[in-house]
Length: 174
Image (cartoon, rainbow, N blue to C red; front, top):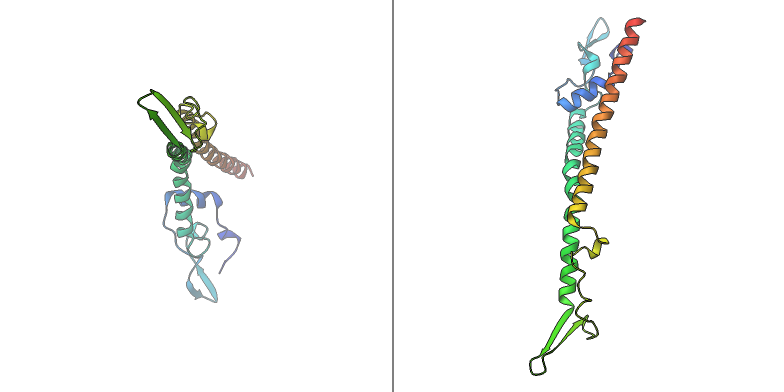
């Protein structure tokens, strides 16, 4: 039951409570208790949970936001390393070296066709799967994106706080 506009939930306080994991009462009234035909409202009814199970949903959302940081930081570099290992393994399995001890001749066969020469089988650096990028470049790139993500989250929070302060100042003047 929603008693009226004086119990309207505060979005800013709700967001602060979400990140602080503050325990709040569910609902706006005291267990459907009636006094004189009217429901008894909780004190500070505007600070209560807005819907059943809200604390669980909020905890999951905060955990997802926190888990995104290491995933963003290490996801692409780990995939890069795994791709390099797969690329090296594929090249190692397809190369055959034949050496004739009597004539001192060697032959390197890539893909079993016997037509490759010694300089063709490896490009060095191991970055063929990622167009010449090396691990350091990928890690720095991901670190920059992760820092940017965190700064944007903090910036949006600061913007909400500025709007809140502006609305408070406006309310005082009115």
